Amino acid sequence: MQLAKRFLPFAILLASSGSIALAQNTEAKAPPVIDVHVHAMDGSFPGIGPMCPNTSKFSASDPKTKEEPFGWVKEPCTPALYPSAPGEYMKDVLAEMERLNVTAVVFGDPKSVQKWKDAAPTRVIPGTSFQTAFPSTQRVPLEELRRDFTTGGFKVMGEIGLQYEGISPSDPSVDSYFAVAEELDIPVAIHMGTGGSGRANVTMPKFRGSMGNPLLLEDLLARHPKLRIQVMHAGYPMIDNMLTLLQANSHVYVDVAGLIWSYPLKEVNRYIERLVDAGFEDRVMFGTDQLLWPKLMAYSISVIQNADYLTTDQKRDILYNNAARFLRLDTSQGK
Ligand SMILES: [Zn+2]
Image (cartoon, rainbow, N blue to C red; front, side, top):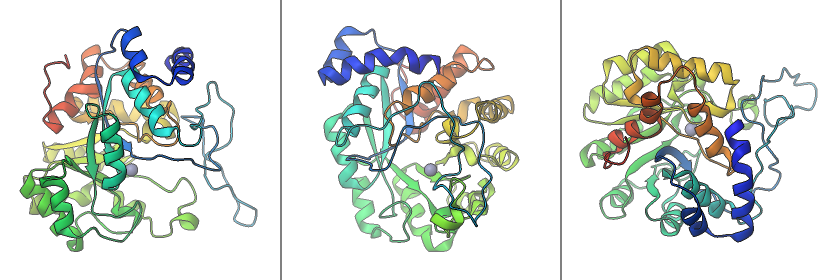
């Protein structure tokens, strides 16, 4: 929270100048960060207001009354995170990435992601999935996806949100896509854990929390022993099953995106601490699930930086080194 507040004056400076280069020239470079979970959004988001991260609780509602579209209680916070002005989102997030020295895996349909890559070639690692949209049961033709990775420059297969379709990542109907990822040695990023924000039965009736159980990845891993998997949202809150999977499969990594700002802070820290205390500090990767609110990334980084249970080295591992290893980037600048 403190960090986000401190960054605010710089944001105003950036917004008024509209220059990414300014940040480069006037500020000392922060240590590099890799955000493994960003969405290639752009445009405007009507109806989206300010957001309070780490809301203290979820509401109890009654279907007989008019229910809110989201399940978080409405409570004030300082500072609240604001959405961008219409058409400014991509520019705002890329300016944040420059200021915070972030390289990000940006997921979406190839066209949207390419727009981000063109705008910031050195900061964007492009990712795309076999789902045409999120969530969607439509599939990208296998050969088209193969081309995205062999000649299109895409580096990660994700975000794969099969639990929003109510199916398991080990479902045979999607196996050919994972087979291609294994064959091409492309890491896959799969949404595992919670979703639905308190209204799953109304807004996304096919969503199944049970299909986000990390152990559902076991059959997939058995069929594809070289597949590198990023368990998005760290399978929250199924810590026991997550640890079981991590212990059995040493090239499975997790990201802490989404959960890092959408649950009470004490709970977020407890979950990350469990992963680290169990011995998996080398496989926890920082991610924001960056969407809608450009300051969400800085806020999420501050959660790791303020974690008193992590050593300085552990923070660097989570913020940079682990993702650099998973993505096979040059790690020389990370330490
Ligand atoms: Zn997700």
